[in-house]
Length: 249
Image 1 (tube, helix red, strand yellow):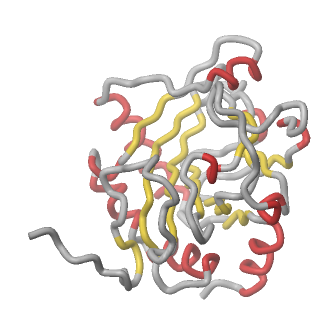
Image 2 (tube, rainbow, N blue to C red; image 1 turned 90 degrees about the vertical axis):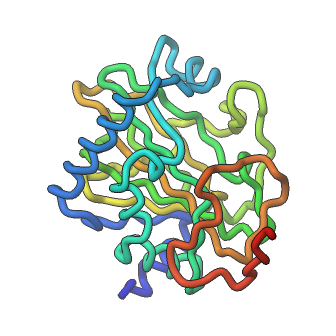
């Protein structure tokens, strides 16, 4: 059961850190799986140009999309009731549909930051139910570039973003240092609305920061534009798809 106070906090603040959703041994196993997947792939660095400016020097980021197509471990976590029950409660629906997944690893001592932004700028939807869950597979204190949020910012609706350098908010109006750091431990999961302004700092610690991002939605919420596709998009993680489009002949 999800505590109603958790839902109320999420609706007021636009985010919720769920402590210990996974055990530390589970988180460690997923951490190893993340690094194994990235070790098998030809890695590309998705660091935004605006992030390099924010960092004031060279930084790195390792990632991959659609992790469940590279390892069954990530397919299992997508339908884990400990996760999907929280996602459903926060959206206020019985049905949870996948939008996309990503593995993110910020390497030790030089892991790239993210300027403040809303995910809505990258994947706008009609009903704004889209949410994100960041699974932490190792500890994420502030020095490891933990996520930072602006509580209550989701209530402002979609904000105009700067396209150049990665679809981010104007740093002069939305400085990263003004956002609240959400430090986490291995096994914690951070949920937030795609309208919540968020970003993250540089990982200056001696250990990588390893996370798994799942973005989800109410299946009744349709994308505004065809701007962000993934191989798994539309998969039901909980409940049913009430739209049920007819299969292709």
